[in-house]
Amino acid sequence: MQHITDIFFDLDHTLWDFDKNSELAFDKIFKEQHPTVDTKQFVKVYAPINQACWKLYQVDKMSHDELRYKRLRDSFDALNYFISDEDIDKMAVDYITFLPENNMLFDGAIEVLDYLNAKYKLHIITNGFAEVQYKKLKNSGISDYFISVTNSEMAGVKKPNPKIFEYALLKANAEKKNAIMIGDCIDADVNGALDFGIDAIHFNESKIEIPNHIKQVNHLIELKKYF
Image 1: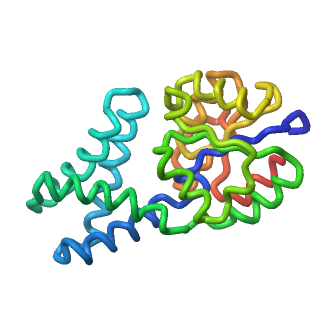
Image 2: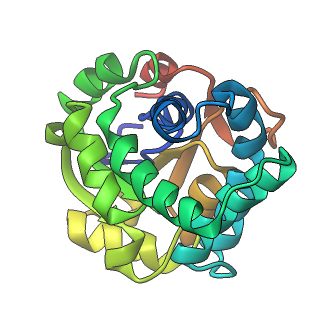
């Protein structure tokens, strides 16, 4: 990795522990508004539905507003829990408000950022909503590590579209040959970067089976072996 000067990180599910922070946000909402809903049971149903919605959102088959509504509506329907559209709309707003109030990072995130920051220029490329992502970075105490932050709203496209990687490189004043992408999503982060022509490492915390040619780590501290 001697040729690398710029490291681009995904945020959610890579540095910022989306699942833990999401559960905390829902727990606050349910205690205040729907005390009969069991948070852990809801999250178990919600997680795969949210993931499926995000996959559609990434390829422009679902809008921002549709995503925020459908992931909640489908989850409550799956639990046979009646909730009005008005309550869904309120919950969608409250969830986005409460989510960045929680600051759980993946184990080793600060240690590896300290390690890499001493030798490389660090950046963020995220498909997350801009209004929330900056709050996550600030509230979790990691915003100062990153020279640039590229989100899909400013780029006009989402990962894996090559235009977002091109936008991020221009914003970072970086070259393809000197850049690498680190993220949890094979399609959006890893294949998106590789198809664009920059190297990539898969943060494979869940240890899913991936092609042998793809670099991977199961824990953030393992990034040290590459850098």
